[in-house]
Image 1: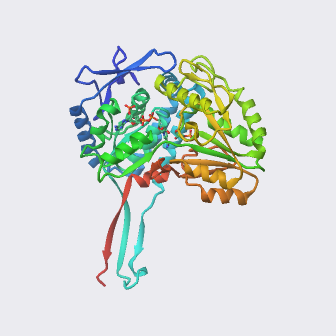
Image 2: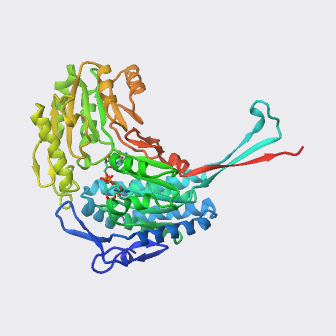
Length: 486
Ligand code: NAP
Ligand code: G3P
């Protein structure tokens, strides 16, 4: 099924108007595995003219697609979910090699995505419009009724990051197309192969020609051109705050939905179940080497229980398996590239130099950063504020819950936070005051389940995702007002 998406020499093609096309130019980007630097494939660096053609194709196809009944669109999504699961072995293998995610997490990303797609179809089938009587507003009579339905926006540009190359592409594509938009997917360069495989899955399920198209090429080269293209009607972006901010500065009059960086805090109070907190901190802080926006990225713990928590976290870190996801079932994998590993090393050096206590890790082998824990981190250290996107966690000891809230809120980010306590009043006291999209009480920070609202405030994002929320974000109300003559 996937043969057509690449040529024999492993050069991948793009899905354009229902055809898998090579680039006209001889300009390709090599995708190397973060595990062993082997070549996983090559992708076209598309030209502006090719981008124009893709977007015009999407624009044309959207008109007919918007007229297809929702139940028919839903059937295509159910099929796509089935095809995804049927091909899980091949897709997971690509994911392991392309982004270095461990095999178990790669497989679970794929099954989770299939569930996401099915739930999107279910949700869309159950969305209904409303009719609003005019006479509820002062001065109006019963002769005015607004009938409100939902309309697609047009061409949705979906830009996905490297770390969830199937899930964070599909979670844009499925809600966009179910409501009648067409989509242009620009996957992260490292992650493009997974994105192209996913596009093939949707095509195989019956998504009509032109409704889903792909663009490959470096964001730094074609990104600005794509996001400012006149025929893009909506941008759904997941990635760094730096790139997200740039997109929001250079675009105008195009609605944006953005999931950006985070510095999620786990706040541990004196009465917390420390075993539970430590388990969640380690699971939430180190999986896929912390290359997750929602990873726990700092621990704010009440001084009185800090020693006990540190001991428990340290003990659990020692059980994490570090290594090569191609051969072992590991928790800690090589970071996505050398630049990412160098950045984490810088943060580690800064913390060491400024006097933080190294409790675990701190060492590196190539692009593998061993799971690292620092205690007695102070607010002058970079690791207190910056998002490492690598397996290093700072512990900041605090006097009380108000100091924890104050430090938590000083961050530029506002994605999620976790609070560990047995006292529901304290949990609500803190949750009410945290400037984040979601507060998890007695659980790790995480996005799922995927029908929950998922959003970041401050530098962590714009708008709200989550299945129903994403569908609503990528459509608009259309009001038809009936003025009764009698
Ligand atoms: P990134 O470097 O910002 O890249 C994200 C996407 O943007 C890629 O497809 C990239 O393409 C593209 N891009 C780069 N420059 C662009 C430009 N000028 N215009 C348009 N697109 C451009 O982020 P990443 O390294 O892939 O992912 C890590 C970051 O994403 C972290 O900060 C993480 O917190 C955040 N993230 C957030 C969430 C969330 O839900 N809040 C989820 C996942 C990740 P190229 O690959 O070709 O450069
Ligand atoms: O970083 C990507 C984001 O979507 C994370 O999802 O389930 O790992 O919290 P999850």
